[in-house]
Length: 84
Image (cartoon, rainbow, N blue to C red; front, side, top):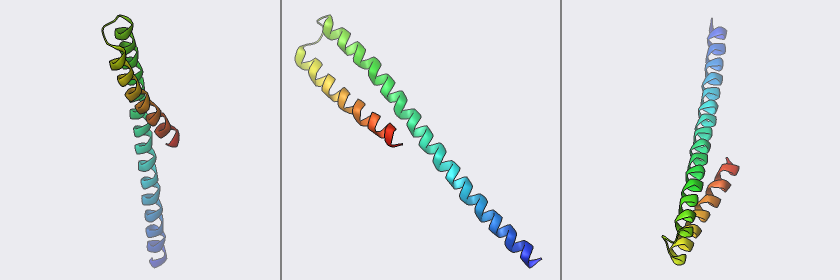
């Protein structure tokens, strides 16, 4: 009976370790999906920004400032996705 109890404890600890690994993988996957969604939204916002600039609704300085900020965030997010 004592041997079976030790086997059960051993299996329980293995199960908890595997559940922890699965939870970590799931959270990484969720983070990757959120980053990809942000990248897609940023691309759409950039298209709108460019269209406003092309239509003359924003100045060159405003366009460049927004462009540089959005591209920097875009690049950071792409690097984060690759690291995940």
